[in-house]
Image 1 (cartoon, helix red, strand yellow):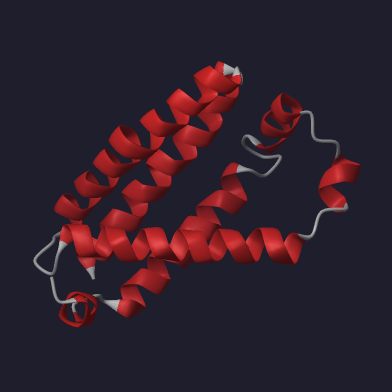
Image 2 (tube, helix red, strand yellow):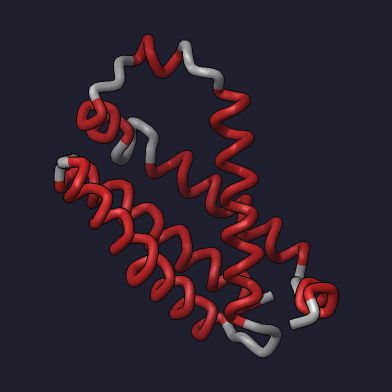
Length: 137
């Protein structure tokens, strides 16, 4: 595999758009309007603890990791992708790889099924949308 030619096929603007979309979804998903309060309660995170966190490190790290996921998803779906094939690829990655990996981790760490549904659900939706954006672009 020639890494230079592999990464030359990445559609960088669509990767950035997919990453931004994932952040927008995450902002809504983990907000008090949807699952933020339930998520914080399941993790026993107080508003004070959340407020005193280093948000620059948390959001900066999350952005970089999401961007890496979008780059790899773009490589997986290829240059001939469509909205539907991108959506399905993202759905399959989110459900078959990410959610199942979360599930194994949650079972062994004895985290709640509710927390699993919140976190895994986010990634299934997120990767589906990222795949759709990457396929459409």
